[in-house]
Length: 252
Length: 297
Image 1: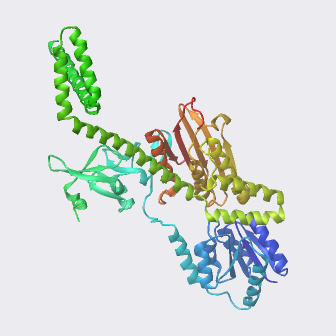
Image 2 (image 1 turned 90 degrees about the vertical axis):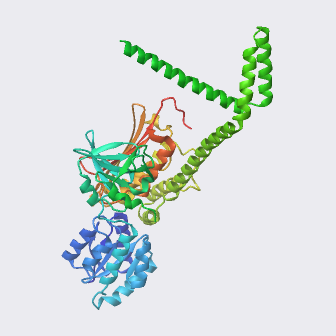
Image 3 (image 1 turned 45 degrees about the vertical axis):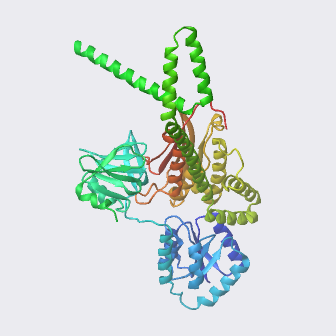
């Protein structure tokens, strides 16, 4: 008996695939159903199915990640409603996939293909999966290591301030002052820590005690004492640029 | 005692001088913009009026000074005043343009293909297994698309009631898909439904809560939408008990767009507040000035 596992976070879609499979391939035994990627991996290890049907977007662990754990032990068929990156990769890599809603004709073809492949060990799709996982990460442009939210205690609540709202950080005696277009907040994180954690392309240090948002810079002027002063869009005051940071603003 | 009196006198003189200079520049502005013909009539009237009182001298001085100012500084001052007015007009036009662009961006970015295809796949499945439920989800999808697609957007969508209706349609679809993983709690008093509220802001917050908070959480959770008036502020909150904000993930286009539009529409009087509740998840709140007298636009 050939054994299969179905993983999809949406119960109606699991029902649909099970019903279609029973119609197209009555001899196939569905040994387990999973509602997320990590359950799929655990259940596959427990039941050792021959075929695993994996939805791509699932909570916890995506179908692609789950496949990376499973591809050496069972045949993988991806199922998706829409995933532009994945579909291209499946075509190029000759991987099996189904589009939701799953049509009977398409499922019949896929099942024929699977039957012919079952005699052999599963394809080695490790490299393609690694590439795909990376491509899907890059689809969301994230520099994951930089701090993007500042947490500040306001009243009894923990306020979350996006770094995009921040005009500048300035160190006070005990605290660090966070200035946005509408508010001024105090946080305990030191300017040194912020300097290490923030994206250096997003905030520049212009003074021992000041970090400014690059996007907000309007202009630099010289005051009567010859100091360079920085003006920000959306902020009335001006900030001093210390001598050893003026090179940031030298003309190209 | 004497010093304070001196100070008071000095203050008085300073204020008087400031007041006098304001009046003088108002006079110059008026002169610059007034028509020669009109000025001539005023001269004539002042001559006649003061002539009757037998003291034509101040009228002659007035005519002499105003003629001189009009000839010497009038043209320049007039150009300045007109430039200032044009500048204000251009500023308003510019703001309106920015706002229109931000609105468009908000509306166009909305319907995600992933959401649409998954919902259609679900409807396809339900047609076979549960036709009444299929019809319900289908109707919700149409409501959602009608409110979302700019081409189909019905007029008068700018009330809180409309926005909540659309949010309910979206959440009903997500409940049909996520089943027991999604609980919805919507607390919006009827009297607030006619309150003006900008389009696609509530929707954006709700989609964030689902996409970044609850969908990635294996157990799922609850989303609460609540509208209330606190003092003179209309506060619309979206709260979820999902996985919470990742401190290293940038805030999306959605939040930036809400902030930009609030700024353009209300200046500093409105705000978007994001908080991390102690129990976990995310709390987002849009706060707008609210007046009881306001009639729905």
